Amino acid sequence: MFESFLQALTAHQKIAVFSHIRPDGDCIGAQIGLSLWLQSKGFDVTAFNDDPVPDNLQWLTQLFPIIPPTEERMSGFDLYILLDGNSPSRFGSFPAWLKQFPNPVFCVDHHPDAEDLFDEAVIQVSASSTCELIAHMIREDGSPFTPEMARALYAGINTDTGSLQFSSVSPATVRVVADLLEAGSFTPDQVAEKLYSSRTIGEIQLLSRSLANIELRLNNQLAFTVVTQEMLADTEGVDTGGLVQYPLSIAGVKVALLFKDLGEKGVKISLRSRSDIDVNRWARKLDGGGHQRAAGAWHPGPMDRAIEDTIQLGAPLFDESEREKMSEE
Figure 1 (cartoon, helix red, strand yellow):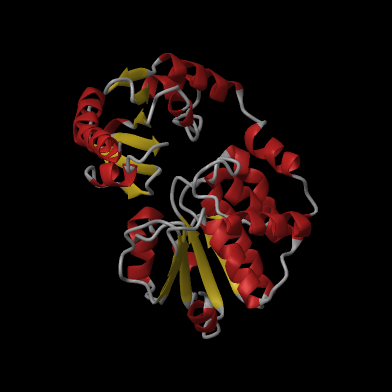
Figure 2: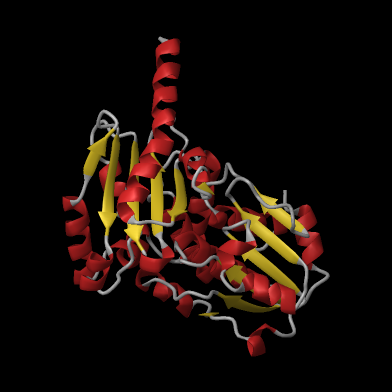
């Protein structure tokens, strides 16, 4: 799968590796794992992200630093690699740097609907995570996992699969995880402690208030909650990642939504499914996208309008699901 990608790498020496803005565990783990592997192969590597790394992932940057791009830092590269996103718009200032410093662009990702603009790309939608793809690539190259690579890639797989609970997990995923555990000199509980058991009081308060906001619609098959600007200000703007999983855990709920008010930037919408309802299709109606079970979108606001428009656009998917269920009976 990676033969063309690996061969094309050999024509380059100084590589800039980008992870997407509003970074999560998968993109940070993939970025650090890939950067460490490239460095071990003799490449000159720098890892960039416009946004800060979330607090619960900061420990990963001790394995390999991630820095914001600047004009001084961006000069001199001969290759860009984008991870965990297949549209340059997901990478902050990257399109501007590409225009100023034109170079080939490679991509490794597991999201659908990739833009056709990469010089080399490995896009596998069936993979659980970009970290899983990076691990497969390292194995195909015949390189060993160092303990540092293993920790980074394991953390990314863990966060993007809900600790191996999501339907995207395959036997290949579990085999990779076993290899990473053998190479990493760590135990799952040690990584889980860093990822999930170091919450701030602000995060717990935001969770409490978001749970109190949960509403049910569409015959109680849709649950959603709202995070307002006031809530973010009161809790010092903590990360909202993972909040959408709580309404999804309600009995009978097929899809959960999280609406996050970003003021002048509009409303960020996180969509999650645990049914045959494809939230990627739903998100694309709002100029967003993602996977069948997890997607994201944006609405210009205000919040009330965002909620009603989003539900109206998604309601036909519930009707379609019911018709298909009846036809199978």
